[in-house]
Image (cartoon, rainbow, N blue to C red):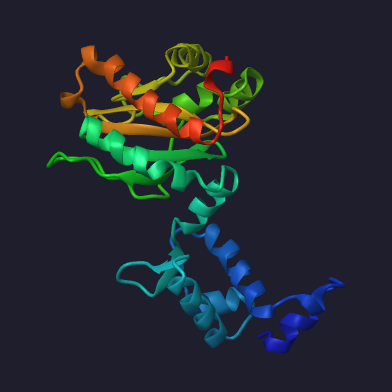
Length: 272
């Protein structure tokens, strides 16, 4: 078993004397847990990281206290929470996205009665950053940190449609496109054609494409340079949004997304 001093002395890095050992161990622990979604108990963390069990325990408890780890229910295993995912997603968007969006999300929720959500791109998926729960007795709720497929989700379509053409094509060609319902688009070429329609409208739909009975309507949010940084959307039971109402709801969602974009200084009239 490697002891406390061994951890500091085994590195060939000339800057090793400046490294904070426990912080370094915590980061390695996070990297290890990222590949083990089922979680790892403290004893095994100590073995795999080659540190004493009591050190592994203290680090795990500290990370749990800060919200980065959680206990798997009815076990002694620790696993990652969505907190790192949210921080990672935010690092590639404008830092004050939450501040500029929260009141608009709530107004969109009040205007439609449906749950309003904020999310962004995370590699080849989307990630939910925040939500304002709907006012109906029956409403959808999605935990922040939840990932979603871009080819079925209204916000995914809206963000992809708003990208420069070359980047949009490259991203779409990388996507895995599993079928969830009869409405799911599973062809890359068909999806790219579909995104042209989304771009022309300014908002995307999820018409029971991932889950039967669910309708989502989303629009992109742009930063100061005009680049897509996030999306705003609503999600509702399909029975509450009829086909003839889709564009009316879409216009409302887009108006609220554009308001957030304007707070970053995006000049929407100059964006093709």
